[in-house]
Every structure is written in C-alpha cells, then in structure tokens.
Amino acid sequence: MPQVRSIFLSDIHLGTRGCQAESLLAFLRHHDSDNIFLIGDIIDFWAMNRSVHWTNPQNTFVQKLLRRARKGVKIRFIPGNHDEALREHCGISFGDIELCLEYLHTAADGKRYLLIHGDEYDQVTRHHRWVAVLGDVAYNTLVRINGWLSIIRRRLNIPGYWSLAGYAKRKVKTAVSFIFDFEDSVVRGMRERSVDGVICGHIHAATIKTIQGIEYINCGDWVDSCTAIVEHFDGRMELIDWRECATRFVDSNATPDPDVILPDVPQPALIRNLLG
Ligand SMILES: [Mn+2]
Image (cartoon, rainbow, N blue to C red; front, side, top):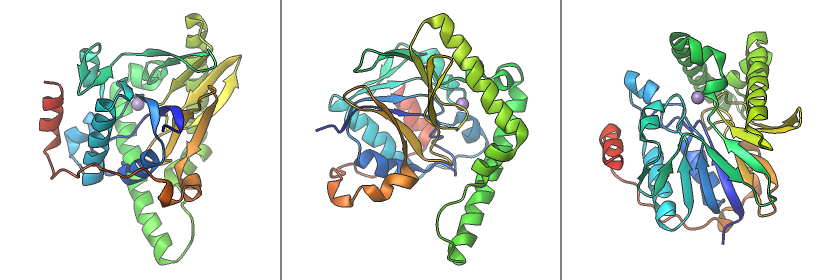
C-alpha cells in the first residue's frame, strides 16, 4: 500500500563518487508511491566522461526503479543537463520508464505543476557551457573534501553531518545570489505557462515556497543534501530531508527489498541496452 501519491527526485548523479545511493535506497524502502518523477541529472554523463564510479547500490537503485515500473508504478524521467544525451530520446519509453522533456503534473488537489529540470533557466549553464563544467569540477572537489572531513569528524567522535558544499552554498555571496537569480528566473518563466507551481532541481537547494504567487518547489539532490519531495494523497507537498528523518522510520516498517544486486555491469553498456 503506497504511503504517498508521488515521489519527486532530482540530481542523483549516478556514476559519480558523490552519489549517495545507499541513503536513496533507504529512502525508497520507506516510500512506496503511485508515481515517481525523475527530474534530471539522474545519470551524470559529464562526470562519467572523466571517470566512472559505479557501485552496487547505484545498480540496485536502477534495478529497483525498473522493478517498480514493471509493477505498475508510473515512472517519468525528465533529463537534465548532465544527462542531456537522453533528451533526444524524449517521447520514448525504456524499461517501462517514459522519457519526456517536461511534464505537466496535476496534483490530487487539482493544482497544476510544471516539472522541469531547470537548467534552461540557469544563465551560466545556458550561455557558457565550459564555465558550468568548471563549476562542476569545483563542486565535485568540494563534495570530495567533505567526504574526508566527515571521516575526520567520525574519528574525532564529532556527531552529526556537516556539509562543506552546503556551507559554501549558503555563505558565498555569489552562490546565494545565484540561487536567488535562478529561482526568480524560473518563477518568471512559469508566469507565461500559467501553472500553479513548478517542481525542478538543478541547483541542489531543496525548498518549498511561494514566490510571487507561484509555488516554487526544488527537489534538492542526492550528492550532498539527500532530499526529496513527496506528494501526499490530498495533494500536499512535503520536503523530506532524509538525513534528518531517517531515524523516524524504524526498519521493521520497511517493505522487503527483493532487488538482487547485480554484479558490476559496465554501465555505458547497460544504458545502451536500456535505450535499445
Ligand atoms: Mn543540473
């Protein structure tokens, strides 16, 4: 019995060292739904051009999605800029997962949300692709340094999780104004589309808020913050911060996890197979 009507996920960045696939699997074990929307940057082809970091939990995640799709969960995948190679396949389905450029979702309360990854509203990625790539390398470096920091914190028995990338995002003035500019530009775009709200990703900053009458919802990411948006059966949207609320779910509530962990399949080959 699903606990929520829809799950919205973005910026999982499969294929990178930073991808928190294990936390994501734990989240999914506790969240069954009628719909799953994958809102871009699910597979990180940019990073995989540099080096591929594909783990068993990442494989299990893909298997789990395919299994849920087979069992009737509606899964829609809206590619982002890191998986833009999939954009040319929009309109087709692979393994029961439907690819679309954008999607108009009507929530249970009748509100209409446009689902987009959002990079088309990011002036930096749009006009200066190399700057975006450079920023991407810098961001991955931050996430990596952060990994070392958390090991040191564990050794020193400092409790909790502290995110350097998150800290930088909140404190660095340009980062703050970047987030603000992005949200503003998305909301302005939505005015012309006459929708009630937008659900996007891209900037790794999860939130639910109303900006100038438009509901602006961002799923966050599974590299740094481990956040998702869920829609309840009455249409209410909720931001799940998995690190904060994982303790709320005791493991006995989890649905059994029948997914078999496949041996390491070279991933580009698997993706080619999925695309037929
Ligand atoms: Mn993106």
